[in-house]
Image 1 (spheres, helix red, strand yellow):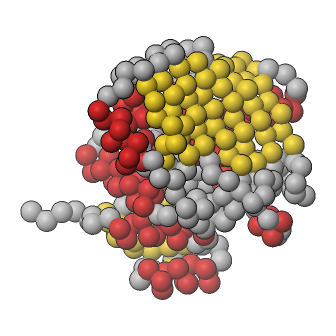
Image 2 (tube, rainbow, N blue to C red):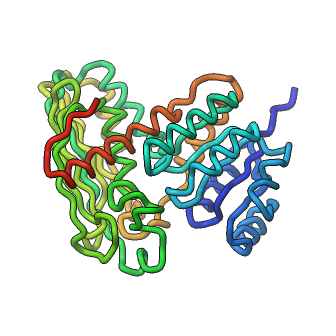
Length: 348
């Protein structure tokens, strides 16, 4: 029996769409059928590169019965419309981070796919880095003892040219700055690994660029289980440094730097720990997007896409369903509100 091929359509033809196309091309049971962008020339160019069809309208692409799954690679504040239209056309949707820039829009997307019986998933490709497996296992086995602290650190750099004439850094299309766009991956990691946040107190500022949104933010958080933590994200830290996650407790400490572990220590040392330190102890040297958004690989995107296709194929829940992808946006919006109002917020 031959394996089914899942046909994809991509909405948007900017930088991130190229990563989507490469990820789809890597899957043995997927094919990029077509693309649509409001700028036809961009869609044509990407379609030629990946031997796909450039559609002249979103409606035309969604009307194509051959397309099973739509990925959304438009500016962040333009995710809801194509996602909802795709649901009404009976297409499953895999959407770039953030799912959208307001909770109301996200909830409209969720409602549309629920009504259509289609699947809506998010893209947080860092969740699919192989180093996440031993980290999740250590948490599940309670090797940290009582978790006392966890934090993320994203000291990145973006030039003025990155923002100039772009939707980046605008409130209408980006929904925020260094947190909503760049640091959201690590905030998702914090929530995924450590758990929900109960209280947050934050400061944010636009210190290194002339943009509407913040380019620097710091938040102190209290997790639901009592641990304390912090979030730091910026695009005003030249020349840009690797992202970092740190978690510590009464029985162990892990420091994760750019998809590697610079610290992996537990009171109950096991043989597997030396193997993990050897396998994941070398920090990447390709830049990881610290100063150039194009300086990332597509392989974790491919793993993210493969997991979504498998969930659709088997009719099983996807690990980054819309309710999961919503959580990082909810926390970021709470950070913005805390910084704006100058007070500690309690999350529901």
